[in-house]
Amino acid sequence: MTTPIALDSNVLKPLLRQYGERVYGKVASEELSVYIPIPVYAEQVIYPGNVMENLLDAFGARVIPLEVKHANRLGEIWNTLPGPLRRWREHKFDWLIASMSHYEEWVLVTDDDDPPFQIRGLRRMKLDEFIAQYLE
Image 1 (tube, one colour):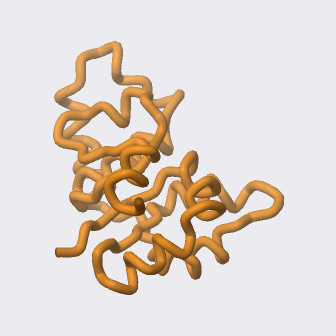
Image 2 (cartoon, one colour):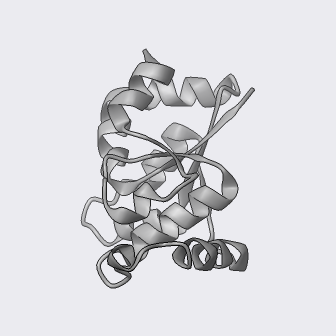
């Protein structure tokens, strides 16, 4: 069975640098499918030395656009959060990444522990956990 994963910005370069061929092999064998939420893509292309095209090729990844269904999931999640977690201005992209991953039921690979990545029902792994489970 194929495991769908989404990659957050903070894991892209280490994963590409050390495990690019292994990830691609897992995609080729249909063990993994790799998704890049459009907010992650946008976060990366603003930096010099943009690696996104190389990463998409190396991982066989697909960039997924933000759709109304993802925004609606964010609204559903938002309305269940206690007040202190509702910090939109600090984590706008993170909320979008988390709601897309939650809706699509991807395993989100991130080393970020901010509130958007702690929502109930979000399938999430730290990079070292992902490597241990899928790449070693």
